Image (cartoon, rainbow, N blue to C red; front, side, top):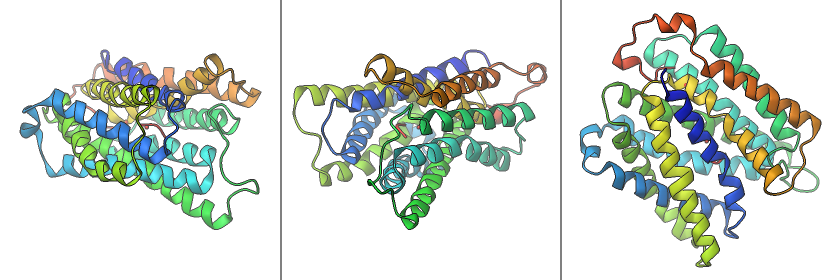
Length: 308
């Protein structure tokens, strides 16, 4: 898989810094997510330039809608379930849906090792978040009503499915010979146009210098640069593997909470972090069978982010 997994993990590291950077801005969370996508999407579209015309397709346009809808679904889920449940379900279901979609679309069954490591990684991610490692507070003092939790979980599952859909659409376009920069430019440039009215309706993010710098970092660093790297990674990494490696995001967020914000990890969060690290290592190391397998372009990226 060459250096593809390293590019995907680098993207996940950038996604993991988004929560800490977002604390510098006092704006509404939906407005912040919209601003991040508008800035990052515009940057990716500018980087792609005229190359977007060559890869433009109905699948990528639907992917752009999925990118924007994911943001809205994630925040709708968190508002109903709290941060911990919404994040675990949305992020944890993403790799599962990605593997299933790739299987259906590419007829390439995920390996047993991928399935085992992904299940372990999701368990580690859940332990890390539920144990308080990634800001698990949320909801009212008495807890969300059961009806809200059910609808919130459904929104989170829909978010995971949307993430899987746009990841698979991007991998398919790149596997068919499309330039990764152009593919990401179409999807995220389109999503930026969709989210612009959302940003306006929610009143923007203010004009404080610190807030503007944070928005620029969120847009250029955790969106534009991260998805530039993610697209590069998809050139040689199966998309199901990439989706599992992206679970490094909550691990980075937890470590930043400890180092930068002075937070403490509960023992269950530490155990989850260790399990997650071993699982991601197992996914990143190529299987022996894959080394002798002849890959065809259509399968590049065939089976494989709350702050994505």
